[in-house]
Image (cartoon, helix red, strand yellow):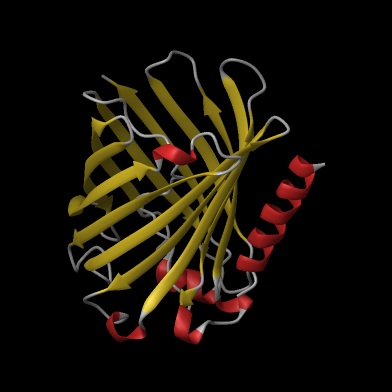
Length: 257
Protein backbone atom coordinates (compact mmCIF):
# COMPACT_ATOMS: atom_id res chain seq x y z
CA UNK A 1 0.00 0.00 0.00
CA UNK A 2 2.86 2.39 0.72
CA UNK A 3 4.24 1.83 -2.79
CA UNK A 4 0.80 2.47 -4.33
CA UNK A 5 0.39 5.65 -2.28
CA UNK A 6 3.84 6.85 -3.36
CA UNK A 7 3.04 6.17 -7.01
CA UNK A 8 -0.27 8.04 -6.74
CA UNK A 9 1.45 11.01 -5.08
CA UNK A 10 4.12 11.17 -7.77
CA UNK A 11 1.51 10.91 -10.52
CA UNK A 12 -0.64 13.62 -8.93
CA UNK A 13 2.38 15.88 -8.53
CA UNK A 14 3.31 15.46 -12.17
CA UNK A 15 -0.23 16.21 -13.35
CA UNK A 16 -0.22 19.33 -11.22
CA UNK A 17 3.04 20.44 -12.79
CA UNK A 18 1.60 19.94 -16.26
CA UNK A 19 -1.33 22.29 -15.45
CA UNK A 20 0.49 25.63 -14.96
CA UNK A 21 5.01 34.06 -22.20
CA UNK A 22 5.68 29.89 -22.16
CA UNK A 23 9.26 28.62 -22.25
CA UNK A 24 10.82 26.41 -24.91
CA UNK A 25 11.75 22.74 -24.74
CA UNK A 26 15.45 22.13 -25.34
CA UNK A 27 15.76 20.18 -28.60
CA UNK A 28 19.56 19.99 -28.33
CA UNK A 29 19.31 17.65 -25.32
CA UNK A 30 16.08 15.75 -24.77
CA UNK A 31 16.91 13.25 -22.06
CA UNK A 32 15.83 12.28 -18.57
CA UNK A 33 18.54 12.51 -15.92
CA UNK A 34 18.72 9.86 -13.21
CA UNK A 35 20.65 9.98 -9.94
CA UNK A 36 23.21 7.51 -11.36
CA UNK A 37 26.51 8.84 -12.70
CA UNK A 38 29.36 7.45 -14.84
CA UNK A 39 31.63 5.06 -12.90
CA UNK A 40 34.65 6.71 -11.35
CA UNK A 41 37.57 6.93 -13.78
CA UNK A 42 35.47 6.04 -16.86
CA UNK A 43 34.40 8.04 -19.93
CA UNK A 44 30.91 8.00 -21.42
CA UNK A 45 30.35 9.24 -24.99
CA UNK A 46 26.77 9.94 -26.13
CA UNK A 47 25.11 11.25 -29.27
CA UNK A 48 21.73 12.99 -28.85
CA UNK A 49 19.75 13.37 -32.09
CA UNK A 50 16.37 15.14 -32.38
CA UNK A 51 14.41 15.67 -35.60
CA UNK A 52 11.35 17.97 -35.71
CA UNK A 53 8.84 16.57 -38.22
CA UNK A 54 5.80 18.85 -37.74
CA UNK A 55 4.85 22.13 -36.07
CA UNK A 56 1.12 22.80 -36.37
CA UNK A 57 0.37 24.99 -33.32
CA UNK A 58 0.76 28.77 -33.51
CA UNK A 59 3.58 28.87 -30.97
CA UNK A 60 5.14 25.68 -32.30
CA UNK A 61 5.63 27.21 -35.73
CA UNK A 62 7.72 29.97 -34.16
CA UNK A 63 9.77 27.79 -31.80
CA UNK A 64 9.92 24.38 -33.54
CA UNK A 65 11.18 25.21 -37.03
CA UNK A 66 10.10 22.38 -39.31
CA UNK A 67 12.72 19.84 -40.38
CA UNK A 68 15.45 21.22 -38.17
CA UNK A 69 17.76 18.46 -36.91
CA UNK A 70 19.79 18.85 -33.72
CA UNK A 71 22.77 16.59 -32.99
CA UNK A 72 24.67 16.96 -29.72
CA UNK A 73 27.82 15.07 -28.73
CA UNK A 74 28.27 14.61 -24.98
CA UNK A 75 31.52 13.65 -23.21
CA UNK A 76 31.16 12.65 -19.55
CA UNK A 77 33.82 11.61 -17.03
CA UNK A 78 33.23 10.01 -13.62
CA UNK A 79 35.25 11.97 -11.05
CA UNK A 80 33.88 10.20 -7.96
CA UNK A 81 31.45 7.30 -7.39
CA UNK A 82 28.63 9.86 -7.15
CA UNK A 83 29.98 12.79 -9.22
CA UNK A 84 30.55 13.31 -12.95
CA UNK A 85 31.43 16.27 -15.16
CA UNK A 86 30.57 16.63 -18.82
CA UNK A 87 30.88 18.74 -21.93
CA UNK A 88 28.36 19.10 -24.77
CA UNK A 89 29.16 20.11 -28.34
CA UNK A 90 25.96 21.07 -30.18
CA UNK A 91 25.34 21.08 -33.93
CA UNK A 92 22.20 21.72 -35.95
CA UNK A 93 20.88 21.68 -39.48
CA UNK A 94 19.05 24.98 -39.48
CA UNK A 95 16.59 26.52 -41.93
CA UNK A 96 19.03 26.82 -44.85
CA UNK A 97 19.83 23.08 -44.74
CA UNK A 98 23.51 23.18 -43.69
CA UNK A 99 24.87 21.63 -40.50
CA UNK A 100 26.49 24.19 -38.21
CA UNK A 101 28.21 24.39 -34.85
CA UNK A 102 25.50 25.68 -32.50
CA UNK A 103 27.38 26.11 -29.22
CA UNK A 104 28.49 24.26 -26.11
CA UNK A 105 27.47 23.41 -22.56
CA UNK A 106 29.23 22.29 -19.40
CA UNK A 107 27.61 20.18 -16.68
CA UNK A 108 28.23 18.93 -13.14
CA UNK A 109 25.96 16.00 -12.27
CA UNK A 110 25.81 14.17 -8.97
CA UNK A 111 23.79 11.84 -6.78
CA UNK A 112 23.35 12.29 -3.03
CA UNK A 113 25.07 9.19 -1.61
CA UNK A 114 23.23 8.90 1.72
CA UNK A 115 19.82 8.77 -0.03
CA UNK A 116 20.61 5.54 -1.92
CA UNK A 117 18.91 3.44 0.77
CA UNK A 118 15.85 5.72 1.00
CA UNK A 119 12.55 4.94 -0.80
CA UNK A 120 13.27 8.01 -2.98
CA UNK A 121 16.87 8.91 -3.88
CA UNK A 122 18.01 12.38 -4.88
CA UNK A 123 20.61 14.13 -7.00
CA UNK A 124 21.05 17.21 -9.16
CA UNK A 125 22.46 18.48 -12.43
CA UNK A 126 23.97 21.95 -12.83
CA UNK A 127 24.53 23.11 -16.39
CA UNK A 128 25.80 26.30 -18.03
CA UNK A 129 25.12 26.81 -21.72
CA UNK A 130 26.95 29.21 -24.04
CA UNK A 131 25.36 28.85 -27.45
CA UNK A 132 25.46 30.82 -30.70
CA UNK A 133 22.81 33.50 -31.20
CA UNK A 134 22.21 32.11 -34.67
CA UNK A 135 21.09 28.82 -33.09
CA UNK A 136 19.09 29.84 -29.99
CA UNK A 137 17.37 32.93 -28.60
CA UNK A 138 18.94 32.51 -25.14
CA UNK A 139 22.71 31.99 -25.66
CA UNK A 140 23.74 32.24 -21.98
CA UNK A 141 21.67 30.20 -19.51
CA UNK A 142 22.29 28.62 -16.10
CA UNK A 143 20.21 25.54 -15.24
CA UNK A 144 19.83 23.91 -11.82
CA UNK A 145 17.91 20.63 -11.91
CA UNK A 146 17.02 18.66 -8.76
CA UNK A 147 16.44 14.95 -9.51
CA UNK A 148 14.28 12.42 -7.64
CA UNK A 149 13.83 8.74 -8.48
CA UNK A 150 12.19 5.65 -7.02
CA UNK A 151 11.38 2.02 -7.79
CA UNK A 152 7.70 1.26 -7.19
CA UNK A 153 6.18 -2.20 -7.75
CA UNK A 154 8.59 -3.01 -10.60
CA UNK A 155 8.33 0.45 -12.19
CA UNK A 156 11.16 2.98 -12.30
CA UNK A 157 9.97 6.58 -11.78
CA UNK A 158 12.20 9.63 -12.14
CA UNK A 159 11.48 13.36 -12.07
CA UNK A 160 13.65 16.23 -13.31
CA UNK A 161 12.70 19.67 -11.96
CA UNK A 162 14.67 22.19 -13.98
CA UNK A 163 14.98 25.84 -12.96
CA UNK A 164 16.88 28.01 -15.44
CA UNK A 165 17.84 31.65 -15.68
CA UNK A 166 18.66 33.40 -18.95
CA UNK A 167 21.46 35.97 -19.01
CA UNK A 168 21.03 37.06 -22.63
CA UNK A 169 18.26 37.10 -25.21
CA UNK A 170 14.59 38.12 -25.02
CA UNK A 171 13.89 36.23 -21.79
CA UNK A 172 16.63 37.92 -19.73
CA UNK A 173 14.25 39.94 -17.54
CA UNK A 174 11.54 37.30 -17.11
CA UNK A 175 13.15 35.75 -14.05
CA UNK A 176 13.50 32.03 -13.41
CA UNK A 177 11.83 29.54 -15.77
CA UNK A 178 10.53 26.13 -14.73
CA UNK A 179 10.82 23.14 -17.08
CA UNK A 180 9.79 19.82 -15.46
CA UNK A 181 10.36 16.45 -17.08
CA UNK A 182 9.77 12.87 -16.00
CA UNK A 183 9.80 9.23 -16.97
CA UNK A 184 8.04 6.02 -15.96
CA UNK A 185 9.60 2.78 -17.25
CA UNK A 186 9.33 -0.97 -16.71
CA UNK A 187 12.11 -3.50 -17.34
CA UNK A 188 10.46 -6.34 -19.26
CA UNK A 189 13.60 -8.46 -19.31
CA UNK A 190 17.36 -8.04 -19.20
CA UNK A 191 17.58 -5.90 -22.32
CA UNK A 192 14.15 -4.32 -23.02
CA UNK A 193 12.65 -1.39 -21.10
CA UNK A 194 9.64 0.50 -22.56
CA UNK A 195 9.08 3.95 -21.08
CA UNK A 196 6.84 6.98 -21.14
CA UNK A 197 8.66 10.32 -20.98
CA UNK A 198 7.13 13.79 -20.42
CA UNK A 199 8.72 17.17 -21.13
CA UNK A 200 7.24 20.52 -20.23
CA UNK A 201 8.08 24.21 -20.31
CA UNK A 202 6.03 26.34 -17.94
CA UNK A 203 7.77 29.64 -18.63
CA UNK A 204 8.67 32.27 -16.03
CA UNK A 205 7.58 31.30 -12.52
CA UNK A 206 6.62 34.89 -11.70
CA UNK A 207 4.14 35.04 -14.62
CA UNK A 208 2.99 31.52 -15.40
CA UNK A 209 1.15 31.19 -18.72
CA UNK A 210 -2.06 29.23 -19.16
CA UNK A 211 -1.90 25.53 -19.96
CA UNK A 212 -2.83 26.17 -23.61
CA UNK A 213 0.21 28.47 -23.98
CA UNK A 214 2.70 26.05 -22.45
CA UNK A 215 4.84 23.41 -24.11
CA UNK A 216 3.87 19.91 -22.97
CA UNK A 217 5.14 16.81 -24.79
CA UNK A 218 4.54 13.14 -24.14
CA UNK A 219 7.14 10.73 -25.57
CA UNK A 220 6.56 6.96 -25.75
CA UNK A 221 10.06 5.53 -25.89
CA UNK A 222 12.16 2.40 -25.57
CA UNK A 223 15.44 1.74 -23.79
CA UNK A 224 17.66 -1.14 -24.90
CA UNK A 225 20.42 -2.78 -22.83
CA UNK A 226 21.96 -5.17 -25.35
CA UNK A 227 25.44 -5.05 -23.84
CA UNK A 228 26.53 -3.50 -20.51
CA UNK A 229 28.49 -0.68 -22.15
CA UNK A 230 25.71 0.42 -24.52
CA UNK A 231 23.04 3.04 -23.86
CA UNK A 232 20.20 3.26 -26.40
CA UNK A 233 17.00 5.31 -26.20
CA UNK A 234 14.51 6.11 -28.96
CA UNK A 235 11.14 7.85 -28.82
CA UNK A 236 8.47 9.78 -30.72
CA UNK A 237 7.20 13.01 -29.15
CA UNK A 238 3.69 14.45 -29.43
CA UNK A 239 2.59 17.95 -28.36
CA UNK A 240 -0.39 18.09 -25.98
CA UNK A 241 -1.50 21.73 -25.96
CA UNK A 242 -3.32 23.74 -28.61
CA UNK A 243 -0.38 26.11 -29.12
CA UNK A 244 2.27 23.34 -29.18
CA UNK A 245 1.29 20.51 -31.52
CA UNK A 246 4.76 19.76 -32.80
CA UNK A 247 5.98 16.22 -33.46
CA UNK A 248 9.55 14.96 -33.28
CA UNK A 249 11.78 11.93 -33.12
CA UNK A 250 14.41 11.72 -30.38
CA UNK A 251 17.23 9.29 -29.81
CA UNK A 252 20.35 8.78 -27.70
CA UNK A 253 23.13 6.28 -28.23
CA UNK A 254 26.06 6.07 -25.86
CA UNK A 255 29.06 3.92 -25.00
CA UNK A 256 30.85 3.57 -21.67
CA UNK A 257 34.64 3.25 -21.96
